[in-house]
Length: 245
Image (cartoon, rainbow, N blue to C red; front, side, top):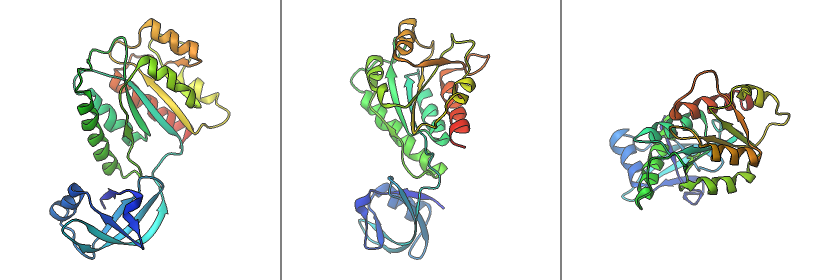
């Protein structure tokens, strides 16, 4: 069953209204659903609903709530991926796969070795990446849609890291301390974490030092050097295995 997303204001009096034109078109034209058919709907905050379509109007579809449950597919650990912006279309794959693995938010980061330039139209990429996130969530049936946040500079990222209980910093020059060692040493499971991944070429020495000075512990993901699009997925899977499953 397909899942659709609404804001809390669309839920009232035991029913839910779907007003998004793309969703309405998908329900009617693609899924070919009508009155009496069932939909799963998320409020994108805490609850998901099993519903039955009771009315299809010009500007909305109304569905009666049959059952209400807290999200069943959302990790308790909220991981924000700070991703050094890669070249070409790699960011789309990074977003899609990390959302499937349970990432809470993605922040593109301009680093010393980032090749992509913010020429004023970067916000268009954020919009496109958010649409990819929306589609990935529907495919894996999560309860909320992870936000693709506005891009940050490396310095802005550094200044934002104090809000995270755990900082995971995979670094290609780290050889001895593994992510397994790091995660096994955690006594109390955190509620949130920052996962920091460099672009092609990794972090510069200056950036790595800034992270270490901040208190981040560098870890290795294994004996091989992973591509930027692979490193985040590998680390995310390890985080979910050790701290969530």
